[in-house]
Image 1: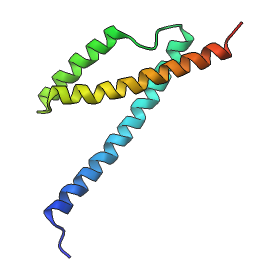
Image 2 (image 1 turned 30 degrees about the vertical axis):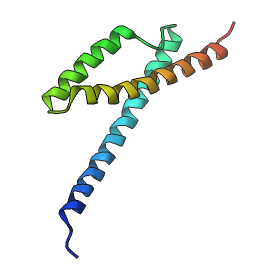
Image 3 (image 1 turned 60 degrees about the vertical axis):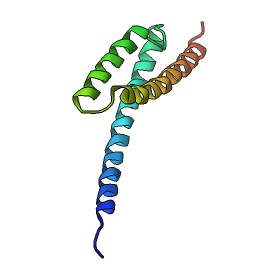
Image 4 (image 1 turned 90 degrees about the vertical axis):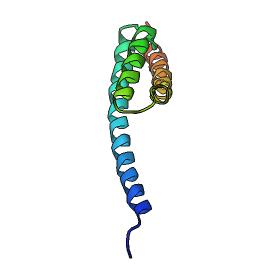
Length: 100
């Protein structure tokens, strides 16, 4: 049976999805460590200055790869919201476990 062009494209997308998930897993491992560091050092879960810098960087990077910068920013807004929520959870658990 001949593989159609559609099948080839879908296989390529599936491989990219695999790569994205692998990278996201690594990214979230690192942000988990950031959350623990922030909690241990009494830093806010959300850093608006850092976010602004990240969004500028992401938009420039997206443009350099012919990706709509607003699309990239929207995707990263979702990622950052998940991370911030998780950092708040870590902060609460840390506070409960380290009461005097």
